[in-house]
Image 1 (cartoon, helix red, strand yellow):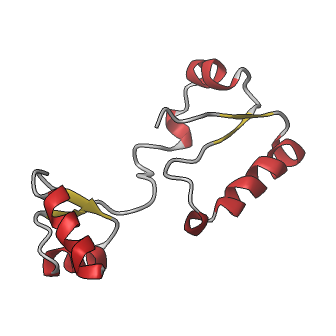
Image 2 (cartoon, rainbow, N blue to C red):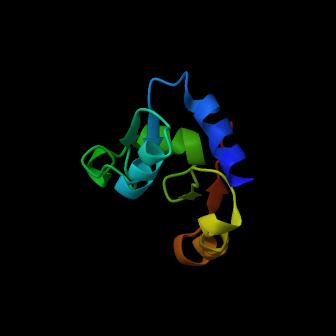
Length: 108
């Protein structure tokens, strides 16, 4: 079954200008498997772009409804290997540690 899956993945990715990967190991595996144009996107948050010094009170009020409302955000697909339990724990802990909390749903 595995060769068939890799064949399908090559077909699926063929029209793409590039395929973004989380790291070099995945990029190297995709190259080895014939999935063209993989590039490392990386992980984490760009702290030069996203940092408290650039905080917008107006945007935060619009998004969360208040200055002190905790915002719990998850960006990505919901799957067991994505440690969803950590997201659930953050949601449960937010009102205890930060006061009111609001969830923001992704459109995807």
